[in-house]
Length: 173
Image (cartoon, helix red, strand yellow):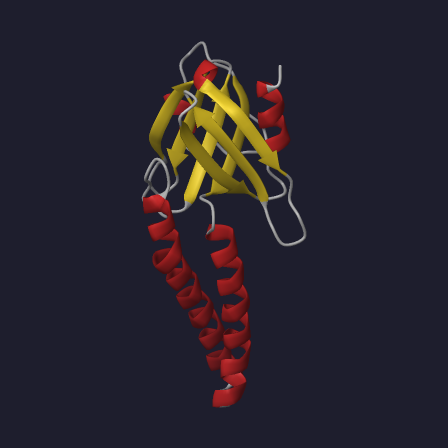
């Protein structure tokens, strides 16, 4: 596992003889767009509302923080959870972690809480195929898709900082 990443209990699911090739943190498809739109709208409302209400500075700060938290909650519960539940395999929310080891691919549901990530799927790396990568554009994240056993497709989105190309390169050997 990369030294930059904190251990979050994911290593508990690794076998003693397994070596981690790459670990990715991402989201289900579509959540990035909802999060971006919600963030922009939330920031605009949060910065406008104190001025419109003409509240004192400290109250304005509290209003800004409250609006941003409310916006995050609305995006997470209004869009993130339904997207996670419709994803394959179904998850409790939009956040996922993928760990590729030398023998398996592990998919974790990273719930929005202090709880440990939940192992949703463990697949033999030899069953993973049709790995497709789309690089990040100005307004879109990196995208990764793969098939399990040639039939079940998985799709995820990742931030620019995630080493998705390293994941793809592991299957090009």
